[in-house]
Length: 216
Image (spheres, rainbow, N blue to C red):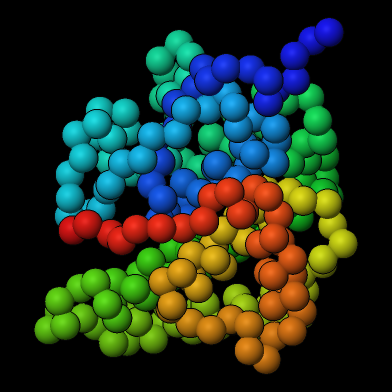
């Protein structure tokens, strides 16, 4: 009898960070795809002001996540890693192959990715940057992007679709915003709040909760 993906020993290494929405997206994706046991997860602290030599040696951008393949090749950018992982399992693909399902999944992923990027910039301008160097108009612009995204999701998110990379990116991104206490996205948005609560109860989410703080 052939082995299931989750019966195999680790043959990939994921350079990870316990408080990165981009890294967590990859790990949740791997769990949803039944590939968790094939991945050795190694936490690394990184930040734009804290050089991590091990990460730079694997990714010249110095960022996680990075997936180290069995032959030593490294993959970076969460979407690239997830695309690779989706080709390793024989179950339903989390990145659909055909339009329009593929376009819907990738569009939702792009929205979630942009939401996280806006959240990172907003956090820099409201918390992480020294106060005398902060630029309030930039913070306001990023906050507007976040609020517009939340309102769009309240009106347009379809809770009936099978799980795709877009849903994974959205759930991990929203939970990161809640973890960092950036902006309330549930009050006044009952549909989004219900979807967020239900997706957050999935085993893949429960096994990968955020922890830790950024070290600058």
